[in-house]
Image 1 (tube, rainbow, N blue to C red):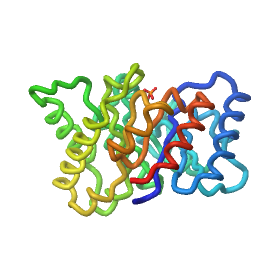
Image 2: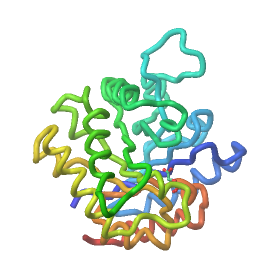
Image 3: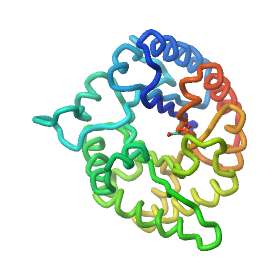
Length: 255
Ligand code: PGA
């Protein structure tokens, strides 16, 4: 199996630069001891330069939480993928449900993916249903449509470079994650839609993460039963004790 990928989505946290530097430093130190796990932190834009290690660090990478559709110009409040690349970012979260909630459509998400790929960065594309109805299975129709719309502009040759983060919205910021067996079932479905869209080889290789109420206690069953390639972690990624433990657990898993 490939290296596992754990991404910490800091959202609009922590509230001070000092704290941000401290958290980043502890995670970087821990990452030096990891054998089969890559760690990405995605702090708010303003903390990226100060939390990035001075030297390249084997398992530790910088991420951002979004990027503009446009490459440059009169777009107040926006940050381009090229600007992020210039300051050392490698991964960019796109289409997070909290951005979609503020009006980001599948079409915009699709354009952002292209902007990020064109710049040579890795898009971490969030998808996920708002509600789940186990009986009717309507969430599968929703996911199929969302995947088709979201990846509409991606060329086959770039599809393997994408990271998919499956985040059922009802499990984000909740008390419990999705049940690991449902994660397995849903991520198999996601790979199948990806296979129809691109090709089965790409679908098999593409990195699929799970996100939504992950913590150090549930990470093991999510990863080993859910058989995901890694995790997109919100709250627990700025809870330093919990996150370091989560990294230790993830790195120790064989599956
Ligand atoms: P959570 O957030 O881990 O706090 O549920 C996950 C996310 O939004 O990426």
